[in-house]
Image (tube, rainbow, N blue to C red):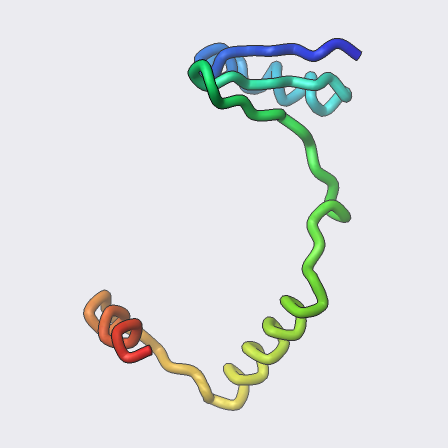
Length: 86
């Protein structure tokens, strides 16, 4: 299949059309300036995976929250103080 290259300006102006092409399997490369490019690729729900280590961290954090072992931060100042204390 042919690769379609578009500028970031063209992409912004016709996003819907390029998303639809990518959905149909067309490879769309978006060029940003002279040195940077991006490939527009649809992802499926099974493309996003959580590693076992990250899943364990999430479960531990949820349990800590249930056990009341969390700290609520109500302002930017409290957040800065908490981060400084770490």
